[in-house]
Amino acid sequence: MNNSETVAKRTHNEDLKEGNRLLSGNITDTLADPGAECFSHDDYEFLKFHGVYQQDDRDLRKTGKKYIMMVRVRMPGGTIQPNQYLVLDRLAETHANNTLRITSRQGLQFHGIIKSRLRETIREINEALLTTLAACGDVARNVMAPVTPALSPVVERVQEEARRVSQSLLPATPAYHEIWVEGQALKLEEARQRDFVDPLYGRQYLPRKFKVAFAVPPHNDVDVFTQCVGFIAVIEKDQLLGYNLVVGGGMGRSHGNQETFPRLADEVGFLPPDQVEKVARGVMQVFREYGDRTNRKHARLKYVLEERGVDWFRTELEKQTGLPLAPVRPYRFEQQGDRFGWHRQLDGRWFLGLHIEGGRIKDTPARKYKTALRLIAEQFRLEYRMTPSNNLLMVGVTDGQKDALTRLLAEQGIPVELAQQASAVRRNSMACVSMPTCGLGLAEAERYLPDLITQLDEALAKLGLGQEDIVIRMTGCPNGCARPYVSEVAFVGRAPGRYQLYLGGNLAGTRLNRLYKDSVKDVEILAELQPLFARFAAERQAGERFGDWCHRVILPSA
Ligand code: SF4
Image 1 (cartoon, rainbow, N blue to C red):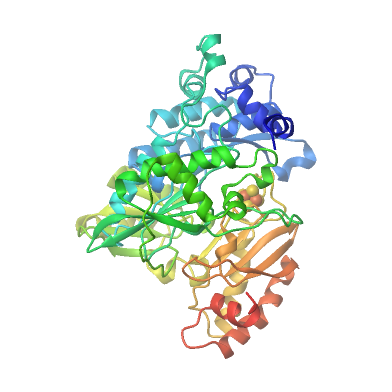
Image 2: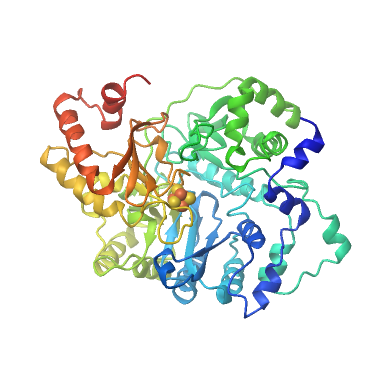
């Protein structure tokens, strides 16, 4: 295909990005216009690069469209300091719907911000030394990293690395700061606006989103094979030797489009720690050059790997970076998921893992998570870490703080013991946001999964399976934000009240599950799963997990 054909066929998004490389659109004018209740369609696309999704409350559509904004905070490795958390907590109350949502990439997002509050919200986030820049859009998204301090001395170093890589992959447009922090019309003179080219992203940014994560085996809490780029730490005697690079994973697919599919990343090679930034940028350059700019559903790095192969990719990457990769070193993942309750850190202090249902930090009559997290940030000044499974760790708790902190949580109705926090299945479940704010949602997810888990819990308990920690995920559409295709059981929204049912992922998150039923009504899910649970209870091999049993017995041809 020659260049003129490529230009002729590229998507409207490509024209937008190249036509306004500052990514400023008309955002400033619309913000200043009190009569404009929403942004234009083109600005909707630009806003994503600023960490903003224009949405509407789908519950209210019958009475007229009510525009609201989702604002996502970029937090590499999910880490946030107490003073920063307190700013977000306050903004959630004053400017949003009084909740904070932990994202599946370890960020925090606000829902329900009206346009007139948008600039103030983002300015205050920046004043707290956080950013929303590149939390969405055709750029490198929030960089994920393991959170658990008890795991390995390498975790803290990898957290540090995630922050560095995140910083090095940020777009350079000055428009973000000028629009949101300074709050003025763009000050860049016209010639500079016209000539601006991002030094890393070039004239058109990336074909689509780009996801980077670090993992520290044997724990695969970030689902590293679902990422565009994964750095898997190789450790010997507690020393970080380097990283195995895996490339080309991704979850998103579209119903009825066989050209789209979930894919696990391929192993590419091994690199020493000091080459991480260069290699991350190099992978991005290959994507920038070879990703499909003519079809956004096909515009992910995973399709480049699928179609051109890992050997081709390795050669291209080495050309980009000038760094030859060594062969992959041995590693082994054993599990994903989070640790709940109190655990000792390697430095002798404690961390507490808290299950947050649906990742939604809010107060309910029974459990006041939002109040508790605010009080703890105020009184104990603890660092919080958002986990890849939408839960939260409090880290660095001293012996002297531990009991007082447990008491404070109890006063807000929140238990710390593993079993009291949530059932085994609930602790291992994850749902995307979907209704009522995600415009792509076809079925309920966050609002429905808790009730479904209650039903599943009862069914499992009757079969003596109450302690089985089956990994269950639900998304409102096939885009796969909650990484459903690597879970043991997945429900993927097909239409209102209908889901595809996938079975057979494994505990380590290293195997894709498979489609079991293409369309199951929400009210029929229990009846669909009950016989499988009963057979599993009767037929399983010693220690066999539900996902492995499904893979072996129910969907054996994989
Ligand atoms: Fe929205 Fe689909 Fe992502 Fe769920 S998986 S948050 S419905 S885009």
